Length: 189
Ligand code: DGI
Ligand code: FE
Ligand code: FE
Image (cartoon, rainbow, N blue to C red; front, side, top):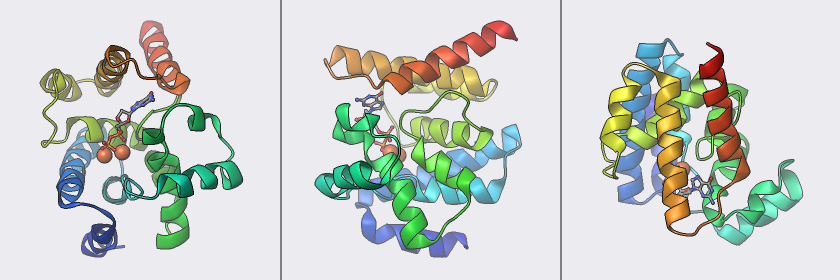
């Protein structure tokens, strides 16, 4: 699928703000793919579709997870997590993308998972550092991202967990597992 066609496919599903965010994720993902040697075309499609389900009806998504998806654990950790695994499902069903690497990059873009592929890491990080993001600590993560992909993800995860803790929100265990996995791997190296 060509870039223009993919962008046309997501536009009706997103607000103007979220569409601009998606263009930022696309830009960052392509730069990271170049730097770390990932497939540019897969990075492009995964970035464009990563928030495809951001504005879907939450009840519909909860029902989808209950009925169709194997991992139901996200249901207990807040509705914000639904759009990633449900997005992967809808993108497969409605857009016809079948590449599991692309679908996994969409599926795990919010929480990460232990053992992420290069493409998954790139989409996870691009979502965090895209030029439109302004939250505290993002500039430091952008700098680390120039040199060390895993370290940048650890920094992003640490910021996100800190953010959730400060607001008294639930932290999804897989987010912590991802953090621990990357720290343990860095110690081994
Ligand atoms: O969809 P975006 O806004 O571009 O970014 P995202 O997919 O990373 O989603 C961000 C939201 O997800 C934000 O509200 C915080 C929430 N979130 C991220 N990690 C976790 C989380 N929420 C819970 N409960 N647990 C997590 O581990
Ligand atoms: Fe998202
Ligand atoms: Fe996003």
